[in-house]
Image 1 (spheres, rainbow, N blue to C red):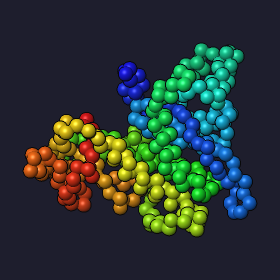
Image 2 (image 1 turned 120 degrees about the horizontal axis):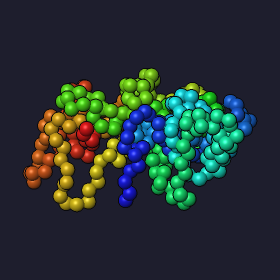
Image 3 (image 1 turned 30 degrees about the vertical axis):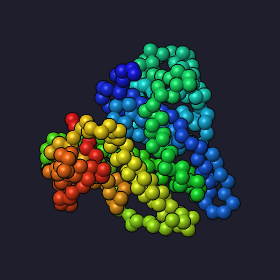
Image 4 (image 1 turned 60 degrees about the vertical axis):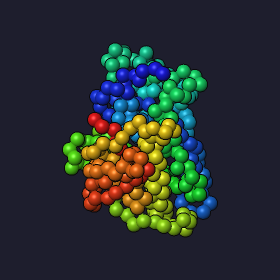
Length: 311
């Protein structure tokens, strides 16, 4: 297994070095109401190599022009990156060729080259070289495609939905923010983007399973809430170590910041707590912990909590 590249270990600015990949296709409607025409579209997903922040753009074609438009929107909101890693798709290679021709024909080639973007392409048939973007595609598409198959949104509605999904992905806890035992705030990718955690506007829970019977603006909220419920629970499961050995190799220490499974929380609100006590069983192995949370003290088994990495 090779060493991580320097862009994965050195932090300067968010999205200074990033990766991109496409997900889809997804079908969007050209207008509201019956008789609408469905248009095949795709998701361009940009991932910061350092802080793993995610930016999602909706594109309506696999052409170089559509990717260049998405890249211009991305640069206008996140800043120009120094390097972009991608596979050898024709849209990625075509955009690189178009920008390279402009540099060659320009009289100020040296000045523009310093302000340009370094396009990096992974070897053919080697998607694991761009594994960071592949993982972001799975996190976005895995749950979203199950809901988009039962309803068709317009471009504006789909763009709103993807922006809310992007906020959920950027709100996931990465590690503890400080070692203060009374601090229950985690470090998230949003801290590097806006300087604080992302919080959504309060909205009542939508419990109607038939999405087609909802108003159009409620469909977007239903998709967001469903995506949150599935992603938040599976994110905790992925963080938990699944050991097949009979002996445990890790222990939860007192004062550790842990992520708690909770199915009742609204979107973008993660339940966290500090370990204040542990309870060993008859065999001497600790499987239950006492946690201090913002709502008081609770007791949870280890299968419902996950310690965040320490600084």
